Length: 193
Length: 193
Image 1 (tube, rainbow over the protein chains, first blue to last red):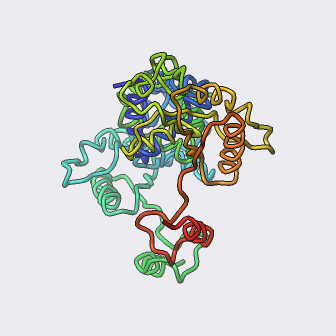
Image 2 (image 1 turned 135 degrees about the vertical axis):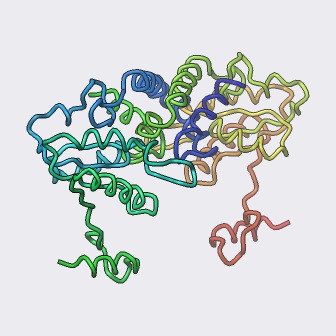
């Protein structure tokens, strides 16, 4: 396999990149941006070596504790549970949450043999048992698997006497009712305020 | 800038990758495929260092001559001119051309100050002056700039007494006439056979 073919093959492993895009990326880098290729090469190696998981919330971090867990200004009474570092980043961008996080290793998926144990439910229980935590916010996805995850965790938390809440379901901001799916409208009706 | 941010920044330089995709790719690699990240890092460095241009046709090659130019079985009477190594690859995949190639450095674009000189017209003239070349096939794009490129090169070749042809314009295979643009239909009518 030539170096060019090896590069196309490696680019195909990126999510959302097929044969054609991989080819276009490889040709672009070699023809117009070799400096970008070298920079990407170094960034990948550095990230793969340096980025670890925060000991406390398990999001990506280069230090033992991530910036959020290391910040004493946040509200220790709130613990928000998400499925991935990407979901944590999305919540942070809203700038409307000031508590701490706990990042699961995905979501339960019984068909794939992924249960509460595999996504780190035990570590979550240990973390939530912290006396300061008043409320655990379950911010898993609103998909079947995300809902199942939230359900399993809510049960386990309740058994330990820890209060949990779920993100509100409803009509997305900026959407016209006509184009919103019926399940969402039904939920928004039930949860009206 | 953290290693993760540096990685997202570097991924954004890939064509067709914006902030969101770059983030998704970085998170995916770090969470599920660190081996893929390291492999891609190595493939990028290897390709950027090893892939050079063929001395004869200027497509990508790791050797002084690319596989095609080094193949004595091809038809030395035909020389096909393309805009990029990607276009060469597309023509090769058709398996219907047995001559040699010449890869330009893009296409003329007077507004950007890119003229015949910048795309390598002189090298093409030197290559086409080879006694064996009977016909130069101009396979530049059927866009305004690609057509301008073909026109400029055809004039220069004619001045040197070298015959040039252009890829046929017409209705794409598999398309219904109703949905083909009028310019294409008009050309297909004129060039009917």
